Length: 200
Image 1: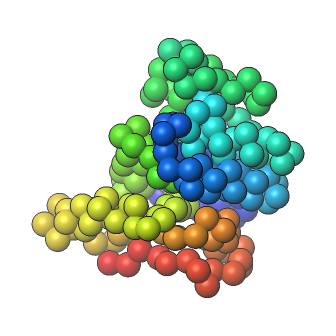
Image 2: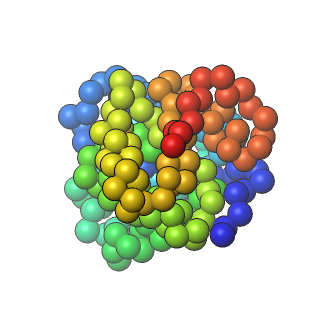
């Protein structure tokens, strides 16, 4: 099994790319971007300038943080590639995800749509297969991700997924709790009073 990083240097953020998202979620994404910059953590994200991912990346960049975008060439216009940050242009979604995975020490999942679901299910599937032990933190405002967690639990209840799978991530309901949760997962000793671990 892959080893949990002893110290975080880079964090991949998976999130929605819709500008129609609730303004509060866009604000939260920007807060996370600033928090990553303040923690001197490289933000790795999908390379676009729209939706939550754009809000997070722009805020991190404007706060003096390091940002790396990874975007397929066919999405450069649709997701409005953010040219003010370093961006790698790739040929496929598979290549995008592979680079994001390889270069990241941990993952944060903000609210998102079907694309975010696809990314996080693959990430957790790889963890289920012991291909990595990188921390995964869901930001779960107002129970946004509860239906997904319930579906995971349903597969456990049906004996299709081992119960230990439910310990593969941590869920927090305040955006300010994301960085402490990441640090806690690496044994950095951050305050985790607001962190709620997913339990079996």
